[in-house]
Image (cartoon, rainbow, N blue to C red; front, top):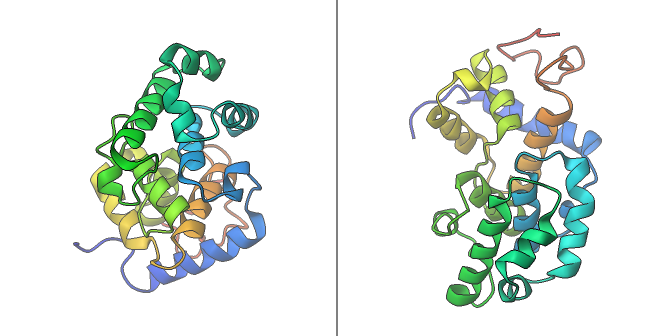
Length: 219
């Protein structure tokens, strides 16, 4: 792996300060109370393009109806799409249903723990594969969603993440994720972007990264 803006002391400071911040400010979300790969898969698919507040009740309802990958695989596509309403983006339940059927057919109703293998499933991209690997299995797999792009872009490049090449952000995320606390670190990244390092009016003054953030101050 080539050099990244996170080499050396900055990488260590970012990790330490982010994990300390997360210990105080983490959100209590239902999918953080489980390490079940299927439950985490459902939450990650639902959270694509949908706000957390809208996902929570549907997450509980969907898992009551389809508590396992096997239960979801047995349902018809029409039933699954109906159960998804009103979240929208209806290609998502189709992909989720396909993943369930493939997991049952190829892996005995389980999801693999390897990000590369997970990406062979239709409907599981690089981000979702990393989320399952780190949140369900504790693997040091990087993630990169909109919130993470914004945080990494601002702190390490001094610009919005949309202006940084995605391959560079993936490389940076991979360099940052710690081997032993990947779960907490990745959850912290998403929370930090969602609640503090927001698109508008970020909380720069109390931000623990402000002493080395290349975009400080924004607010």
